Length: 296
Ligand SMILES: NC(=O)c1ccc[n+]([C@@H]2O[C@H](COP(=O)([O-])OP(=O)(O)OC[C@H]3O[C@@H](n4cnc5c(N)ncnc54)[C@H](OP(=O)(O)O)[C@@H]3O)[C@@H](O)[C@H]2O)c1
Image 1: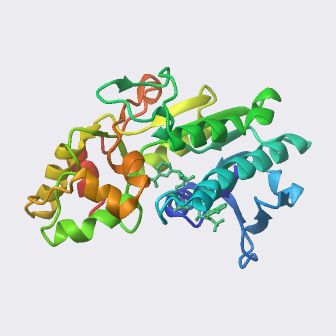
Image 2: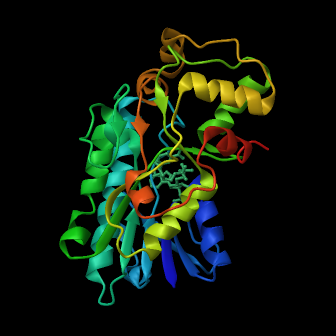
């Protein structure tokens, strides 16, 4: 099996490539900088350039996109978050159908941001889209694979929840204050957080490559979604630290701007309904084990 991976230098991409190689697959990686290894091919998602031969593979996992939490959401940054995903996905989708020997599957990342801020509602894959910037981005990001889907390629969109991992992502940003005993709930603490441990996410992506019955949007989250207060207690417990310092909503907005409302204060109680009905078994279904596996 030969798999093309974009975003291979990121948190998820690194772990996925390692897993694919471990199971004996050949990995080809699309990178934006000049290639420095035999398995790298250069592309420029914004310029729309990519060597057509790169698509001569059995599967594609497309993860690339501007990190959504690395900078404040200025107008320019929001445009970059959206365009890096939509333009890149269109390019991948077109490349995948233009080649004579087509890949069997395109797994193209999406996110639970699709559902927006939904309070207590339990969200499976049949739930309607939500409102807000991230929901708009996710809708356009998923639609950007239209050409591949219309040409009959199997397209899967993992709607990824907050990835728990050591050495990167949202959890790493939380660790310092929590380790110093300065952690606490954010806002009311009642907002739902839907998460997935990195090892499980990598297994989910492999499952999506392998299982020919998987297509369309599929929630890539653990079954054990928690409220922010529950998450805070669990993280304090794993680190053996008190969590007495709540971060009021206005303070979160002051520090992070618009991003605070959509990333920290919004509520999405997402269920992995499609994965569970496909018989997928999580290694870390509940928050305690998810955090223990992610905090070194
Ligand atoms: N981590 C999470 O909690 C989470 C949650 C929901 C959804 N997701 C989605 O899952 C995907 C992978 O997540 P991740 O955490 O691994 O992301 P990440 O660590 O930010 O890595 C993303 C990769 O995309 C490429 N990239 C960065 N900026 C780009 C730009 N402006 N244009 C095109 N490519 C760019 C980079 O690879 P190269 O430099 O090699 O090109 C980078 O390594 C992302 O699309 C993300 O939105 C992640």
